[in-house]
Image 1 (tube, rainbow, N blue to C red):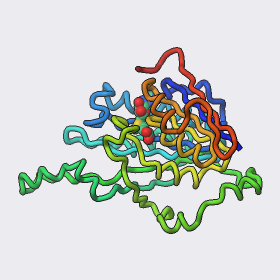
Image 2: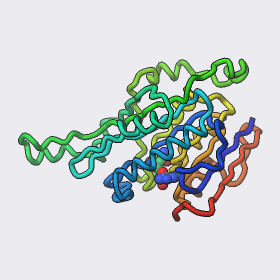
Image 3: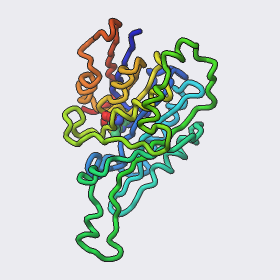
Image 4: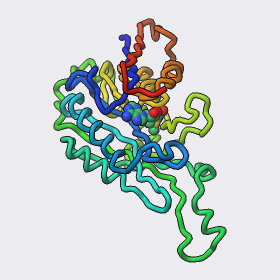
Length: 280
Ligand SMILES: C[S@@+](CC[C@H](N)C(=O)[O-])C[C@H]1O[C@@H](n2cnc3c(N)ncnc32)[C@H](O)[C@@H]1O
């Protein structure tokens, strides 16, 4: 069975191309609020940032099929000594949009990640009380659900085709709230200047929450990690990305140069460039 992949270049605060209740899973990571390296000064205020999340959560509620899941990789952000409670605020916004807050996982990066992000050095230089800023090895992955899922709506054939690999589930400890996953190395060619998440995150989420042939959406597509893994796992995908320049990266990452054939079946990739709302 071939899959289809659609990239919309535009702002995901509105999703007019996507019909109501047509999406079976969302896996996404919004930009980190004014992250010092990646998004310094991107948003004029924290209120403006939350406004984006509010609009997106409402649109996601509209496009999600009943019973389906949103996997949101997001985290609190420390800027100039103040931590912004983004996880708590995003949870509240998604609840207000109508979602049920179902779970929270913690993504733990390998200890070596500290070489990239070292805040505890302040105390090493000033070994006295009040100089402590811990190095952050963690990010949150919050899970929302739109109402109740009807397990009988899936045919036996599709259930079997979508069976979770129990060995992988056990060996890699998908079953706890602590997901240990490598981060993408800064400077990786396809993810340069994009705060990409590792393929392992959509890989787990798609295996756990979407059946073969269904459609996975990433409204903050970035380098196209979710779209790549959706295709690999026989699911359709839709990505929305505001930066037009990322279209070629996403095409490359998903392995599309026009149309291609996978296992003898055709997979299709389409780019929709909106009239406005995108940036170069
Ligand atoms: C954290 S990155 C996502 C990275 C992605 N998960 C990956 O693995 O490559 C967030 C992306 O959202 C895009 N973006 C920010 N605001 C947007 C908006 N309002 N609509 C669509 N895309 C947006 C940014 O350009 C950036 O590429």
